[in-house]
Length: 113
Image 1 (cartoon, rainbow, N blue to C red):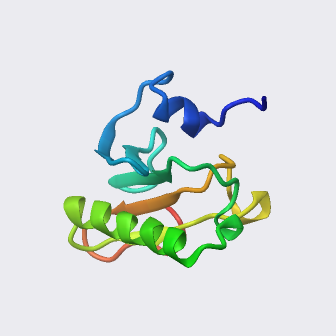
Image 2 (tube, helix red, strand yellow):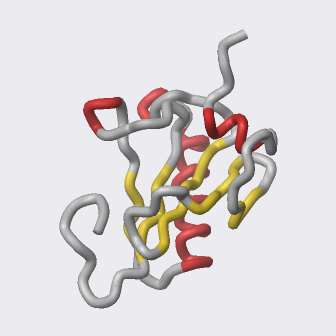
């Protein structure tokens, strides 16, 4: 059996985190190294290493609808970002969507502050 991803360990409550949303299929947590005043991660409980491994339209749609739901619960304006592969900035190989926002005035160009 392969090692669990960091996010699987969070889902299984083996690692503490600040959970801001959870249902049967998704969990959303505060990022421990935020790149914005508000930085949340929306994580599917079903593991895929990269978002481009998701081939089911319904599964992809539910991921994005959940990310929007979480974002709207915490922010009026926000960015949704997915990093795909190490060359795309992905550090944890378990699909997740970054929800970023909370900047005063215009947001900075790029990923973070």
